[in-house]
Length: 625
Image (cartoon, rainbow, N blue to C red):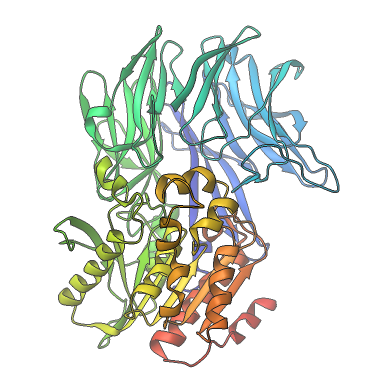
């Protein structure tokens, strides 16, 4: 059965690397354990010729040396509250502990694999207070920054001796590479606090010397073949809504690689021959291409390519996800071959539902892509849940969305749309919500719902729910103040008042000024585009779900909307999780995630199927055992 605990059956695959000779791969497999309320992480070393596998238990962050002889990785010492850095010699799988450190960030191999760079962070650490003199004060997924600085320490591989160490005054940005090896040194990407997603300084470290390669640019170094550096972003951006492209740096010259291909790029690799491999968001897909003198498409299927690596002779390994099957690893050398079956095997047992693609014209003729899932068991008319992605520059499409599968397998139609502002289309489409968020994009969603009513007569028009996280939470808040079509709503980690979000959010001081407008204290958009301004119009029962450690959309956003609704006598409920960052739906502890899914299932069941008055939460008692 598909229920709130089914997610623990699935495995997540990450940190995929292939040896330069293409003979073996390494990767990390992560699996939730409901009983221990934790995640088990295991490093897999797989020989592609023989198919044999070796395992390193309770370890993560595998980092393959350039020559393929060594594997660096880390494991947590919970008793000492330290991170251990280990080295595995792959020829005989012998292992030794190199060092113990606090506040681990990343590892980078240097100097022909004779040295290793260990990146950590340091904070003030006063037992009574946090202190900061810059913004942001906190950052989602990193916590309260507390005057954070980043440390770079170089260790000799054989002895474990520290050869050099220095500190830079910046905080580490999640999902942005801190450093890459290049020639005899390494390149550092330093996010600038005034807008850390589009303003960087790029430094080059060589033989004890640290020099600027670029100042105040909008790209970061993501790979090197020791002659050329591959950058992702743009030389200059005015907003985060702009697309990212790939650029090759060689001998002081910067060459644009993918600017003319119009799609937003996610990742890239450059091998010694100069060939560049990269992923792009294309109309609900993430595709894999390569470029030398022209672009060649390697994988363009109805799927997401989530991670990949390339050997020196052009063999590619990648993590692929489809609408019906979570992560699996595939191998490409002219033909695609599946080499893992972790999740495929589970799906064959429990089944999944294939989303149906359609497109439609919105109010102004703009063509919008959408997908919907039919209920597993269709008995007469069924309620429908509209799911809104995050972003607004998120994207639905050919990915495995557990919550959509969960709802469809429990009797609901599920509608997924890519309204204007979404990724996967031309840059202008992504920018089309700037300073009008909630206006035309909401109309796109409503038009999709109306279109689906015409397609599927079994959809119950009187039992429509809506839900979403982040921007999806904002849109849920907006929808219930702008329309009475929704009979139940679950708003998660969303925004209700742009002005307070400007001050509380880790990125609000620049992101809100891009998306909503400059001069927050004077700009009418901060009121006009805030769902809170339409609280009197709300007649929809709403459940707010939020987490206390969300510093992207802080929990005051749900609390203020909830408080005003209750004061006005409206039907509203709030579930505030005591931990969890903005992505708590994916990264929180397993029991936390299960309770969240149960809340969602029960609220929609009680409101859309049973037409229940109030919200009975006795089901939470089952989690106490």
